[in-house]
Amino acid sequence: MAESDSSDQSDGKNELAEFRTNLAEDRSIMAMERTFAGWIRTAFAAIGIGIAFRALFGEFDPPWLARAIATAFILTGAWLALIAQHRACKTLERLDPHQLEHISPPNFRWLAWCVAAGAGLLVAGLWILNDGSLGPGD
Picture 1 (cartoon, rainbow, N blue to C red):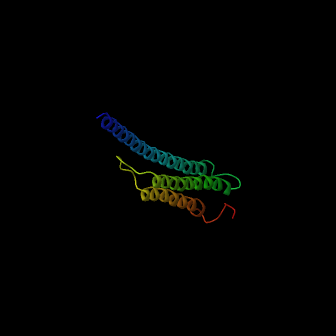
Picture 2: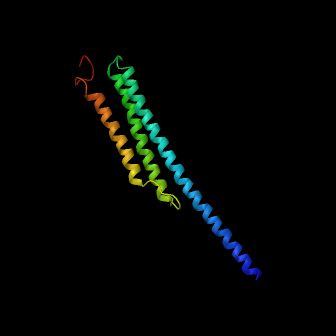
Picture 3: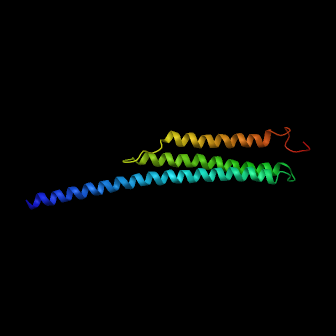
């Protein structure tokens, strides 16, 4: 009788330990999603700094310098978005949700590639959508 009681307690402890482990894995997924959102915010901040730099310092001499610095910030934002989605997708491959419905990897990829494509269009606009020259005297 005592053996069956100890075996019942041990099964209960194992179930509780497994339940806690499952919850920890769900918390890890949620933390990864928050981290991804933070990286995307940082990417948008870098893109915004690039736009602001170009707007505030557009009259640099030489004239292409403001565009070059803005381009560096904008492309850094695109790179951050792509790296964030890569890391998020790799993390999701290792973790299994238990009580939680998480975002699927294609949604991470879609968002990151849209940010990167938008940044690319913005860079193209900085360099092409003027009078077609690299500077006022060109």
